[in-house]
Image (cartoon, rainbow over all chains, first blue to last red; front, side):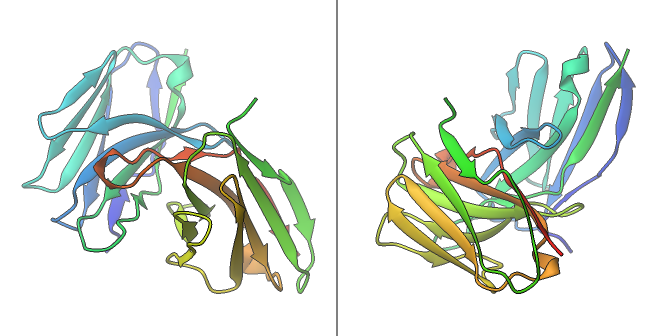
Length: 112
Length: 114
């Protein structure tokens, strides 16, 4: 089983739609969680951190469910510019240096 | 100007050749990383360095070596390139580890080994 799993998509949605992605992780001791955005042929960039209480940044809402070991990203009122691949990233809680574990990404395509 | 730069941006080479990918940063971060990205897989860590005298292997270090020439520079070498090292390579930096770690990526180097 992969440490971080995501549905690769693509999710094809019209402008204005609400879309949600889930990501599951295998290490129950994981400490921190992030969503990164990666545009085609570009570098990943941090979109938002995911906190236990859930957090919102404009049209984006991230939630964490520790009991079921998944995190989610909700995008409301989708824009064409939201088209990208969204990477779920987990920081494990084991000893030593905790390297980030990247999911393979979920591709979103927003169309007019 | 970009905070994290990588050279070259694209490289095509032949099996058996030695290749060096370079990374420079102006963010003043101590920590630097090299990742590779393959279709359908997440980014995988090759090597990382927490300061100039510190080098650590990541999950896929075989066939690669690194050099941290200065705080701002971290180079990745493929001693004898093979076709399955064809991938997109990213350098990244971070200010500190732990739960607040945000990694800043360079634009990537697309490497093709024929």
